[in-house]
Amino acid sequence: MVLESLIFPVKAENKPWELFFLGLLYASVGILLSLWIFRSEASMIMVLLTVIAVIPLVYRTFKREEKKDTIVRGERNLLREHGKALKFLMYLFFGFIVAYALWFVFLPQDTSFSLFRVQLNTINQINSNVAGNAISNGILFRIFFNNLKVLFFAMLFAFFYGAGAIFILTWNASVIGAAIGEFSRDKISTLGSYAFSIPFAIGRYMTHGVFEILAYFVGGLAGGIISVAIINHDINSDKFKIIMKDSLDLILISVALLIVAAFVEVFVTPIIFS
View 1 (cartoon, rainbow, N blue to C red):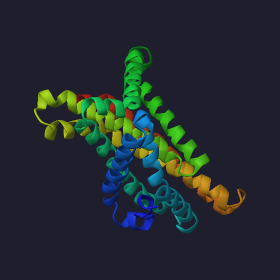
View 2 (cartoon, rainbow, N blue to C red):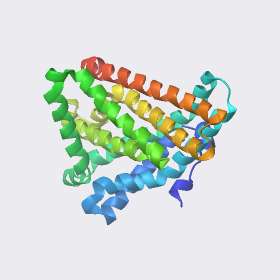
View 3 (cartoon, one colour):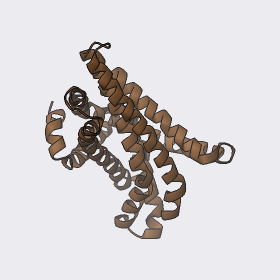
């Protein structure tokens, strides 16, 4: 009852940067508790504990954004209002990523490899799949369709479980954090200090990752709004039709963001961080 009551959507919209530090706190507490109590299954338990802490905020946000659909007039105004929620959710997510990356780097190597065991296996599978299909299918399309699959699950979880999309997003934050941490350790011999290797690794993954993450949040928001609308409104009402139109716009925006992310990952990131 303590962690999940620290902030509400209205305050988060006014001070979105505070969510970064809240993300650091939620993820760090999840890591410490999972190592202390559930050490053998810490890879997934730390994600679950982080999700439990943040679900009340995310669910209240979805309800607030659905209500805006029935009050705010004009699609441009609606998107501007949704942007406020997306902004603080992005700060929260970046807090997760930085926390996971820092714990990966500064924990003893055996402990960090054990803590992020499932995440590291996932990274290896993704890398082998992309490398194995780069020539036959085209790496650009491979990356795009992999990200599209994540977007689909984010919307699906948000629709069926309300704030369930946050589980998919927090899991992805733990994978990205592990990837950043591993890359930082690999670069320490070249860059000489974690003060340089960690920011370099964050830039390496966030150059394209910021578009992917935003896409997942936009899609998750769409699924969450639809979920709340089905509960609160008759599906034949005019309000429900307005909400569905707004949600469809959000889904299209999320797909467009994934296209941008794929192009940046293939054509921009390798040039900057080669």
